[in-house]
Length: 192
Figure (tube, rainbow, N blue to C red):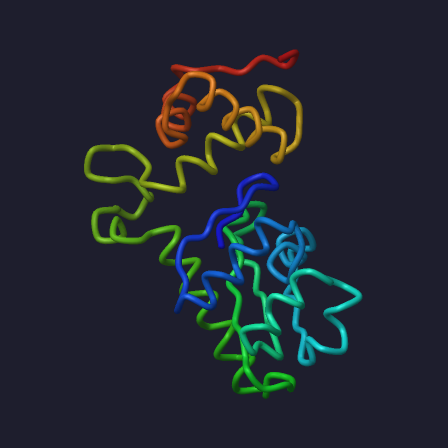
């Protein structure tokens, strides 16, 4: 699940049941992914039936319907840039073993690398620039977010909200607005 501001979007799911559980978090506004995103810390729930009903009543019911008994959510982030959250589900109760936890962190680290670099990794030079001299993919969005934060004197969350609002109002893709900010073709004022 990718996070921008407090809005979420599903990037990928392993199977239809996982996809359904991720979508339920969007709809309900609760769940391990939402908490991991908000806290910027892993959320490790070894016994969903014990902890889940009081923490996420609606989500827990949906998860238990498809046989999920444990859930582990890992934020995907680099410094202040939050890229999303990766959830792992189990049909058996229990904590992750030390090797399983290590593997989950390694998978999350790889997901961050893929989200940052993706298929553009080969095209980037040592300075993180593409052959055409432009930053690639999500890096532009995070750079624009930081620039707008400085321009407006607000927070990263407010900066992303301003970028999203502008893209929506002008019917532009988010990445196109980010590129305009990075290329200094678009500037946001402090007052609105």
